[in-house]
Every structure is written in structure tokens, then in C-alpha cells.
Length: 104
Image (cartoon, rainbow, N blue to C red; front, side, top):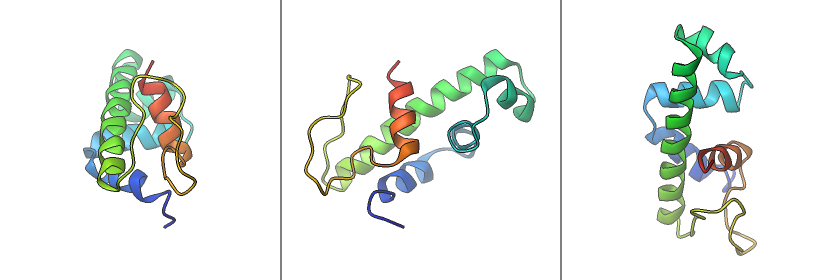
């Protein structure tokens, strides 16, 4: 596991099984909300709600993981704050996508 992946894995480990499943199905597997609803056996509006909450919880867990590693996470804006070259701030594509979408 690369240093950039560590905060992502830590954040994913902090999520409930349901949140992790929802987030990975959409962000990693590329499912659309309608497809997610079929997989979860629920209505699309329910799947969208679960995805929204999973992204929000991931963002919070990811920011917590970055702070524990000594990094400062962006909050309340869409572009990352300036960082040192060795910082792991939003370097992972899942983290970057989930954080961006959770801020909407």
C-alpha cells in the first residue's frame, strides 16, 4: 500500500459495512444510482440517500485520517488547499471523487 492510500484505507475501515459497500459500488465499480438500487434491493431515491450519507461519512473519516497523519484536509471548498509535495491530501481517486461529491 502506498503512502497516498493509507488515509483512504483508514477512512474506509471506519465506515459501516453498508456505507463501505455503497461507496465502493458507485466509486470503484462505477454503478449508477439506479443500478445501486437494484443491487441493494431498494428504491432509487433510497439508494441516492444512502450514497449521499456514505460520501459524507467517508469525507469526515478521511479528514480525520489525514489529521492523524499530520495533514490538513480541505473543508468547505471544491479545490484542495496548497500542500507540500509529500502530503497525501486527496491523492487517491476514490477520496477525491467522494470528497468532491459530498461537498455538493
